[in-house]
Picture 1: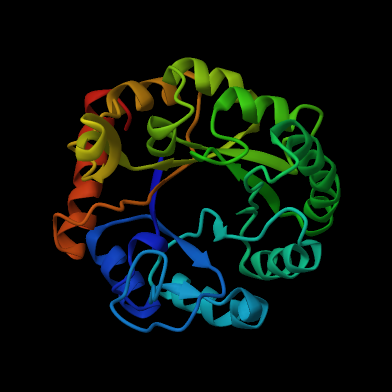
Picture 2 (picture 1 turned 45 degrees about the horizontal axis):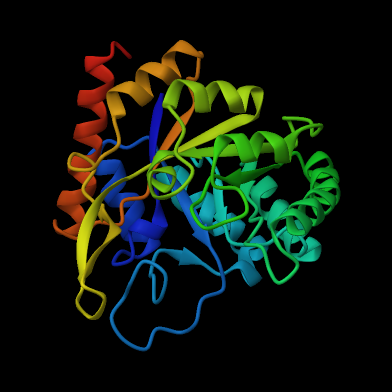
Length: 285
């Protein structure tokens, strides 16, 4: 397996700093965040003012620079982390052209959340939209990936399997994300991988833990999920990696750690050390 970092979790670093740090630490790759974000007005953050983000509107033009920067550091690019939605076909096409120019064969396309029409209608509509997305994928050789994500249309492996039924796995795939699934959609790791079958295209990892939050005016406790360092959360990574091995998965695993207890460089370095410890325990070379 090869390990990468999604740059949404590297908000303090510029792209130049990110490739240098990851290469020095021994990572195999970097998964670039691509989105048009609002100009920074304060402190940098994961989703606002993130310095390690390429604008979606100029991604195709920036591709040569991105390719040179990444290759000079000796890093691979497992996927492109876009935030484009399935009905934005012009934007998807431009991003796929940029990915193809980078030699990257997959990128994320979001299914979004149900609107006033309700879940069933939204599910059916997104599937229709993905017919056109799949055609673009076939044209440019860039597979469209759906990420398992809490509070989205596709939060579980079972929902994803229903969604991608009938689609060629070479054009539409799924990102397994145990961290997101802890919050919503979790299914026993061996079964969730089996459910996805040949549509399993990529793996994201992070960790989380439930915390009690007192609701004073209601005299009750509400449980919320908080992101934690990889070592400290609920996810059983020994089980996940042994399950990945059993199904023959030997692709990329990308970390997107949203915890903030440790300074960024230390956090990223320890995540790689932890992944190596886990894979060694379960017998992955």
